[in-house]
Length: 88
Image 1 (cartoon, one colour):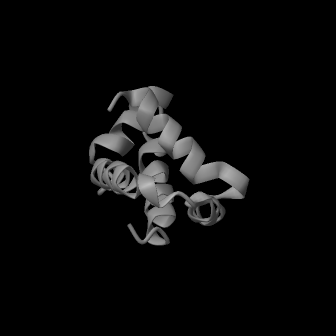
Image 2 (image 1 turned 135 degrees about the horizontal axis):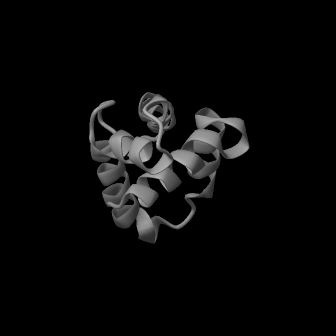
Image 3 (image 1 turned 90 degrees about the vertical axis):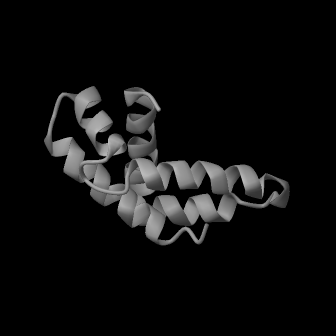
C-alpha cells in the first residue's frame, strides 16, 4: 500500500459525513451486492492489518504523506473507530 492509499483511506473513513461513525454507517448501508463480499472482506482485512496499531504501516504512511506526526495517531484512532462497527 502506498502512502497516498493510506491517506485516502484515512480521509474517507475518518471524515466522511463528519466522522468515522457516520462513515462506517454509510459504508454498511452501501453493501447491497453479496457477490462482492469476498473482495470486501479481503480489503477490510488489509486495512485492519495496515492500521492495527499507531505504529503500523497505515498510520506511519499517513504521517509521512501529510508531513505530520500528529496525523499518525489521529489516523489510527479514526480508523479504529470506523472499523469497530464493521462486522467483516
